Amino acid sequence: MHRLICFLLALLMLMPCVLAEEKHTVFPAPLQITQKRVKTYISETSHQMVYYPNTCNDQIDAELKEILDRLAAESLPHLPRKSALKSEHALLDVAPTVYRTGTSWASFLMLASVMNGTQQLHAAFDTRAYDLATGRQLTLSDVVHESGLDVVCRETEKQLTGLFPQYETDAGKLAALCSRDSILSAHFTLSPAFLQLHFPSEALYAHEGVILNVRIPYTLLASHLTEEAKAQTDNSRYKLVALTYDDGPTRRQTLAILRSLRGGGLNATFFAVGERIAGSPDLIMLEHNAGFAVASHNYEHIYANAMKGKVIAYRDKVNDLLCSLVGEKASMMRAPGGHEQIYIDENVGMPLIHWSLASKDGKSTDFEPIDEALRLTYSLKDGSIVLMHDLRAVTANYSNFFPQLLNDRGYLCVTVEELFALRGWPLEPNTVYYDAYLPQ
Image (cartoon, rainbow, N blue to C red):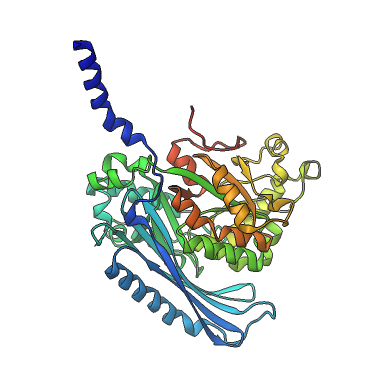
């Protein structure tokens, strides 16, 4: 009897630990966020689209609406009344990218972009971070102790140096941006894996309209996080998924997918083809500025045998394009067709991201969007990497269902970089990654 009682007591003591390991089956109530879209025609060939968040706090909703309306009003004079293309309108796109972490912290990267033809004509942004359970606006001091500011300053200097290689880094401006006072007042958001600082490119380089993003892993700040931040940056109870889109950008489909994902608080990684980057630079800038990951899908969409002797030259052509537009090289790539060996043999020097689950859209469009969204969602595992293609209207249509489906199942939708950072697994060059499944 004594042994039985001790055993039962031990089980009771272990129960909180077991419960702590249980995964969320749905997003916590404070982080249930939707967005309302308001479209306004400015002329026959130009329009404005604004997305307004709907959170559990009316006061926060009102503050975010005020900021979004201000960004729209300030950006509207840059919107042409006549479109440069017959196939699409000139557009003022105003929307927040929503980041959720922990049980109640949410951040909003609010971006206004003016696009006409294939050009970005203007971009402006603002940020806010809140504890949605209490309605309190967060400051950087709520996240990092003063002891961690030196780490943030060093990482900011390291990551901002050498962007836009076509320009020299102004040492004086860089030192000013990386000072403690500047860091404490900087725009920031809190992604599931990173403290993110955001700076306008013109603050450092002779290049306008790009957001310079500094991403500092919470693991690097672990000993400097406040107790509240340690709890709210622990995302171990979430199931993780990385949505990825290949072969773009394309005019209507990529923009529609971005709208669906941002409207539902989801993030993704876009593996872009170099030749298509050149044809839609505005979409690449929108992906980057809105906080999505832009990676390489080679300069041409050609397969292994045709790539012999071209790997390094094509890698550099993609990176030259990306650096000219957003200042950053691609940090990872996906081999067309998933044929990675030629890139390993010729030392491409980047992680090679494969997939664990593929959409039917690579071979067919003969399916109902809701059916494909359901099939993909219910085929997911914690750590899946999903392959899709932003080439076809059907992909944009089924992507529209992801926010509700993934939120209802408690999946935290992250970039590939975030997925592996949350696992604590480094991405190595010339190595193929299929998933981030936890060992059984």
